[in-house]
Length: 512
Image (cartoon, rainbow, N blue to C red; front, side):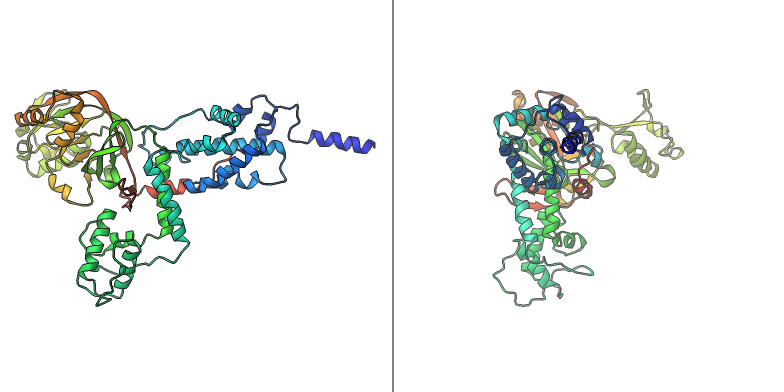
């Protein structure tokens, strides 16, 4: 009998916690995702929080995280249903699973700055400990987690597509093109049937029509390839080359991963983009003017080339400048303009540039020996007067930001005819910018289109402050949703950012 009593007392001393011991002691020794938040949740309490009904809802939502492109294993999925853990450990694990899952639904699993250094977009915030307490009080575990997911229709479209492409990934193998060189219109190749099947599987080619010559790259196929190339943002020349092959050979599994990456990017963003606002998809070379839930205008844009990538961020447009002077960034002056002036001195005047000393004095450019300078010792400031050659064109749209990036017109309007449009030094060039200016200035009642055109024709720099600041969001999506029919386009990852996000998304959650 004494032995039994002693054994019972010893078993109490080695238990994770007793009814009279604060749970913090057990929490401190357990590997958790959100340890600080779990400690704040329980405080000095020894009371367990999770009823069987709450717990069942939580496990179901952990399983449902797979449909959001996340990993259920990050939320203690295996341990939550183990019979060998104590009630206290199970309660703590449930709280940690909820808090970490809620954080990932609300803000994303991956810290965007860890994969995209310049990221400064707004993010959603909430006191998740208070949110969990309220959910436990109301019993609405499922609803409290679901409400933290992005509410945007485009996010929901990606979620549906994720389920569809996972089903495709489990089906028949996807056709793979294996071309050594280029396939041009009118040529014959044993790979043409593979190309035909690939286009049919993607819905770009009618599958009911049998070809007269199965090996001929016919006009019908060329038309389908061009349509596919436009959808994928590769040059629609009808020639099947490396870029087109790369996009055609994307398997359903690879598309699943792209969808997961883009869903994660949505979780990094605020729910409220603003009523009247501008969104730019850098990867799609497209600007959208939004009024509420409606897209009222779209403008093709030119974005930064790979060496000078356009950053992702949000800001508020506060003013426009018609006929702007261009204060040339120092790096551009040293690396781009100095070599041009060295090769042809007269370009300074022909392109409308002024040369200034660092204290702001205008210098006589004809007296400067450009060859005595290099990019390292170039001592001048350059600015370009308004006019037909001005790099900013007729208008620039200013939303102050740490990146010194803005929207503007351009004299190089031929660039908008290209499909791939990453040619700028980071700023965004807009097609039909005066149309955009008219829409932006709709809140300034005294600025009609007639007045805008008259001011531009005068050629004098004119600044217009907006009565109501307008949110501008520069974003990066490699899966684009067509709002009218829910159709998806998988487009070229021009800055090769997807793989970094995917690698971070697939990393197991760090337990502390």
